[in-house]
Length: 516
Ligand code: CA
Image 1: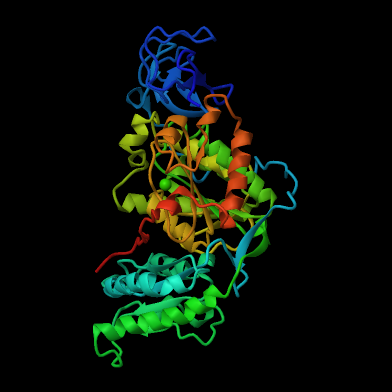
Image 2: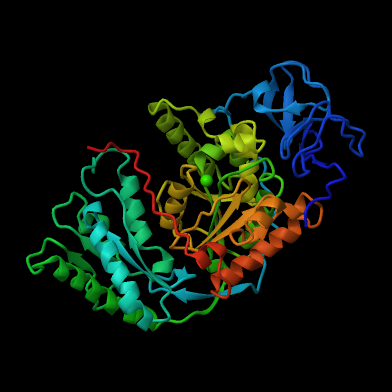
């Protein structure tokens, strides 16, 4: 249901806020009077901010109970508070952050929530049963893609228990500084992508032969799960391959042996604690932080209480709210790990001559987000209220339960790829502006911040959190719906919109090291 077009509405998040968000679709005109008595001094677009009080020049503009900027000029009550009249506050100083001062009381465990998953030899649990083909280098990518097309057409239909065959292709592997500082990130990302729980826990590798990233470096023996009798590598330059046809046949033969194994598996009932749910946002607007993200945050708290792992990421979107996160660190080492990841990224951006104000996109700003501070406060609402139990570097495998921070860039594809490497088996993605984003390796549940988007894109958006803005549902109701939907999708009983259409974005490696 759309919000009532006649009754003007705004949302104020925190009692100390001196701005609120206009809810009505299409915005409101000058002179509009709210129930509170507030009258608009000028027209304000939907999702943009209105001043609830006079704000003097230099005065603080407060949203979420936090200063998101300072007024560059005197702002009259009822005026439009946009990025052009706000200055960006300083980023929190990493040397003076509160640690563990805002730990929430544990809400108590949730028992009895389960899903139907595929148990792997290494103990991880998949929500899908996919055959993944790892590649060491881009040189083999086209050949593997060629083979995968034939496998899907000629072999896969014989193995109906297997959901998909995907090639993990990338532009890394050669022509790169393979021992440079930072190169461990793309290498461990490729390694851990190959070990994602949805791939059955036994990688197959296609290598060229002369590349820098050799299979033994990509997948050292100690990182390989116990392998059965199936050979797991095809090297295209080996002399036994006399032609392109030989190479493709070798890949198809290796693949079919593995397909037989995967097809013999079936889903079994597993506790919700086997879920590793990655959270992300993309194409955010000012509603994201009051509807979709808090609802996902409520679902995140339910997941944590059910014993699952919930992962949030996107360093540049949490950097300006880092003081609120260190205050939620379960222990001092966790807080120090958070600060370490922020400092690493500060230095990375500085090397590139970029500052944090580069984050909000034109679409974000058009959607009412004035700057990175406002975006960060809305973004961390996804992480709910649980203490942060661990921190992981980009591409590291997550090994702990509870709410964890896995450091990644905010780019949807780079973040999604790194969260898959971190072992994500379910993905929840919030959007306000809208994106048809999807991943092949894990189901992506898309939650819209506005009902207008959910209605316009009814075949792309899985859950509408805009009902919170229109007052038709509460944050708790939408959050619980997201939690239950995660269990349905993880069990294979329901498909996400992205999976129904087969919308699968490419893997995008994060490589902070030089390319040679
Ligand atoms: Ca993102």
